Each structure stands twice: as C-alpha cells, then as structure tokens.
Amino acid sequence: MSSTRVVVTGLGVTSPVGGDVSTTWGALLAGRSGVRRLEAEWAEDLPVRIAATAAVEPTEVLDRVKARRLDRASQFAMVAAMEAWQDSGLADDAPDPDRVGVALPSGIGGVQTLLSNYDVLKEKGPRRVSPLAVPMLMPNAPAANVSLYVKARAGVHCPVSACASGNEGIALGLDQIRLGRADVMVVGGTEAAIHPLPMSAFAQMMALSKREGDPTLVSRPWDLARDGFVLGEGAGVLVIESQEHATARGATIYAELLGAGMTADAHDIAQPEPLGRGGSRAILAALRESGIEASDIKHINAHATSTPLGDTAESLMINDTLGKHAADVVVTSTKSMTGHLLGGAGALESIATVLALHHRLVPPTINLDKLDPSVELDVATYPRDLPPGDIAALNNSFGFGGANVAVAFASY
Amino acid sequence: MASTEEIRSGLADIVNEVAGIPADDVQLDKSFIDDLDVDSLSMVEVVVASEEQFGVKIPDDEVKNLKTVGDAVAFIERAQNG
Figure 1: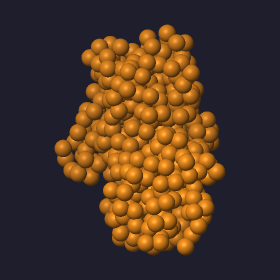
Figure 2 (figure 1 turned 180 degrees about the vertical axis):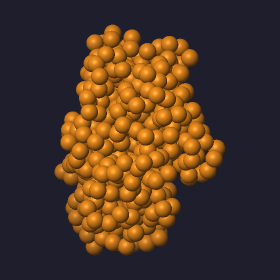
Figure 3 (figure 1 turned 180 degrees about the horizontal axis):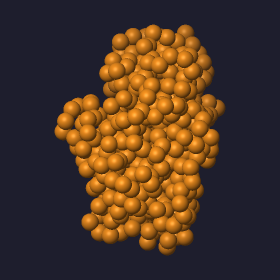
C-alpha cells in the first residue's frame, strides 16, 4: 500500500435529527433525539411502532421527476451527496471524471421499491410493475445515481456488509485512492428500511427494542435498561481525496482519513462474537494501517446500537486493544439520538467523528441513566472537549454476517 | 369515445407526471425521444398509464412505432374505435 495521504474535504448528511450537516451536528450536540412514534396506518399492527425517521423528507429537497425514479435509499444518498459535493468545492472545480469514483453501499438496498412493486404485481398483474423497478431496487442504485450526479468514471462500488456497509464504503474509497485508481472518492452509506416488512423481520430477530413510553428514551446504548436498537434511516456522504489533489486546489480539509481495519468473525450469522475478538482485530488493523499508537486515540464513535450483547462486547474490544489508554478516550454513541441507520450508520457516524475532531467536541450519548457495570468506558453524557494537538479518533461498525470495520481519522 | 384533443390532453398529463415535461409542450408533432426527452423506460411508463387511462391495449411491438405524440394519439383513437 502506498503512503498516499488522504483527507476529508466534503460532508453531506440527511438524518433523523437533521436534513443537512449543520442541523444534524447541532442536534447531536444538543442531545436531541430523532426517534418518533410511527403514526401511519401500516404501523398499527407492528410489534414495534417507533423509528428514527428522516427529519426532512427527501422529496421536499429533490426535483419531483428525479425523485420518482429513485428508491428512498437513493433519494437519501442523493441529498447527502449533493451537499457533500457542494461542500467540497468540487462542484465548481470540476475534477477529471476519470479520476473520481464512488463507494456508497446500503445494507439492504431498494427494499421499499421491491415490496411496493410486489404489491402492484399481486393486485394489478405484471403489466403494471414499474419499468423502473430494477434500476430503483438494485443495491448499487444509490452509488450509481451519485456517480451520475458527480460524473464519476473511475468506478462505482457498493461493498455491502449489513450494518458495517457505510464504513466499508469509506475503507474501499481510501484503498482506491491509495492504489492510485482515483484522486477523489465519494464515499458513505444510505438506508431506507422503515417499512413493515423489515421492521417485522428485525423485531422477529429480537433485535429491536420493545420499550414502551417516550420514544426518545428507547435508544440507550450502554445503559443497564437497554433492550435493543431503534431502526433509523438516512444517509451520510464524505468526499475524500488525496492530500495532493486537495491542497493543489486549495480545498478546506476537515480531517485526515488515516486508515481502516476490516475483519470477519466467522462465528455466527447474526450474533456478535461474545468477546468481540473480530472487532478487536479490526481496531488493531486500523491502528496498524494508520501508523498510530493506542495513545493517539482520544475519541471513539462506537457502533453501540443499544443491544445487550453488542454494547458490552464493544467495551471489551476497546479495552483489549487500547489497554490503559482506553481511560483517556472519550466514547460516544450517536445512535442514542439517530437510531441505527444500518448501512448508513458507519457513514453518518464517521461524519460525526470527523466533526468531533474538527470542532474538538464530542456529542453526548443520551439516555445513559445507569451505566451497565460490565461496561468500562468513559462515555460522554454531555458535549465533551477534545484535547489540542495532533489527535486521532475511531469509528467502529459491525454488521450481521460477522463484518467488522474500524476507520481511523486524525485532526488536521 | 374521446376526441383527438381529449386524448392529446390526457397523454400530455401522463407525460408531465412521468417525465416532468410541461403539458403544453406535448403537441401532436413532437417526438417523444428527440423533442420531449422521454427515455425508453419512461416511454414504457407512458404506455402503461395510457392503457389504463384510455382502456386500450398497446402491444410491446407497437411501441417502437409511436415516435410522436400524434402517432400515439392516432393509435389510441384507432384502438378505442376498433
């Protein structure tokens, strides 16, 4: 692997707590939850009737005709990509399309298009199935649509690994630049799975919280009373590029993308390995690839989805890999506010990690009333300052299927 | 039976919904592809919506012959009368 330095120059978000980066970041710092009760008729019979729905409907932002040709997952990806591309300045700088690529997965793909067309098929017959169904539901549709928007011709990729997908997109983008295949990569992840079928399926896995009462109190990573995650939706997109390319055009640089570690558990199709050894190897691989020490890490945006097993396993991983330095790391789970964006999670949380380094401020984990005694972490429960100087941070994501992806960023 | 103008107007609304073309631009002499920028997948949507609205069948083999709005209106008129 070459030593090409890679930097983050553009950010875009549409999330349960905001329709753009600044609104989302403000909400995260304020500890504002995006978890809501699902009032729609389709949710009436579901065992779980809360979710972290998008704060801003993508159809309010996108052109009507463009939006109707996109699955909701692609709509979110487009909203976030448009913001990130504008933010990077590349919309005006017009880079060589042959040197621009996209790596932007979703965990589940265009499931709403698939299911709504199946409803049409059953009710009205095959002639009424949309001719746009395939290009809308295919898992690589979000990446492909973003490639059309930014005119990316160096490759369009969709590395799917369930809830680790977003981070895997970032890791693949980093590799593409370091392998000399692109100068600029538009990376991230998206998800739009708040629909009765996926919600029923996750509930049947006992993965979703069944907590009653105030929806904003349900997602509670590391809290003793946590009982499952809250499904979220939205997208995060980062523009990354070689430092050389970024500095040559005078781009604003948020942070450096140092490295990534990707491992697999080979343990169980859905359960995390109880000691988190696969995740630990991912963190160690990220440190190694980044050329940094455990003592350089001052912040971790954890995967911590609010499940009993997963949150504890991640605490073990962080302590195993960072040793005594784990005590100096301010950890947070922004999922306490955004819910779990599945394939969008790694991207949204990497953006939160980049902004935490940029502003030297860690957003809180809300609803942490009583820390689970099996968790040994310094969890931020209010916005916490990060120290000055050169510091690094990690974003962890773990996915069904045993995928573990840790991504390391540094202050710039 | 619908008049030529009623069919053109109904078709114009469908093209507007599917492709975002202003309904007033959808005139008989306009080509779907060259003038109205209706791509092949959108054309399938227009055809299926037209079948539903005008109560006709437009066979797949026929679609390639419907180059202009006038071609489509004429086909629908014939199909309704036949």
